[in-house]
Length: 339
Image (cartoon, rainbow, N blue to C red; front, side, top):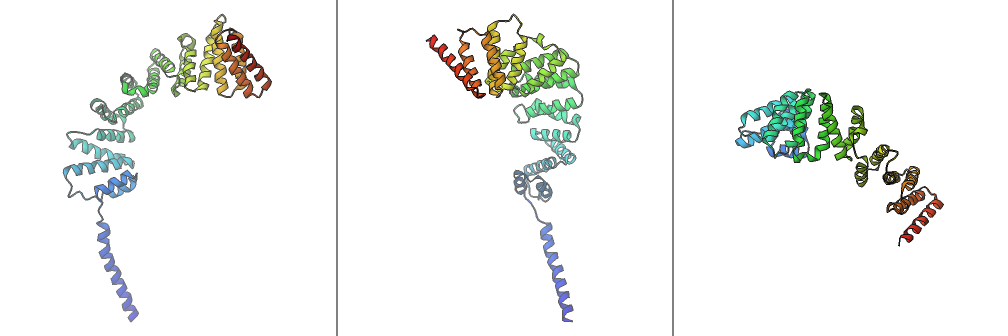
């Protein structure tokens, strides 16, 4: 009997405890500051789940707007793009002075949801209205991508042409030229494509897009007719420490020299090719290039001692000690004769 009464007591205690605790758990509220802190820590999923517990009843109109944006932003960050579209659209419709970030994240939500056509007007609004915005340049890039995805190639070409003329895009100029050239090919404007690839190749030889430009040119035209100064490009590349790319240019420069070309020109190309080979640890090729350079060099020319110096270093790197010593002795004799 006592045991039965004890069990009933425990059951009543448990039920009473639950009825007291549950309202406390359910009514747990999170402030806008709490949610912002979670976002700052990168806890988007948790922030998104807790955002619905924010008490908005005591908020000012400005605070409610900030909360609405935060909820929309969390929807975007947690890949709930359809919900984000609705939230950002509501903000857009309710505001007379639409912030750039609302336009940007609404456009991004459309784009992520595969609706590029709906994204473009908002990206255009950023480019036309918010010229000082941090989203200004990204809006060009995303709009061009959307136009390309929609096969609106000529519109994309016009967009990239506008960007190319703006100083703020100079850092992206190689990429923009490459994109515009590829689009020109899509609309069969081969002449414009060749012009852009040549600009890219000659103005930015160290760019990762330069090699692709040369390959593309080779499929469209005879590269030797384009009057590209491969030797000058190689010099720029070597100054930038890009010796493999410089070798490509030096070999092209060498093939462009006619059999009756000037001896000093051949000597310079072979010399620089040897230096490039040396810096890529291709010492056998370096030695062969320096020997060819000596063949075309004037014994009393200013470049002769430099060729001997690099030839000696190449022998030394190959552990051909005797050849290295003889070359350096020859270099010392030439220098003493100049004094």
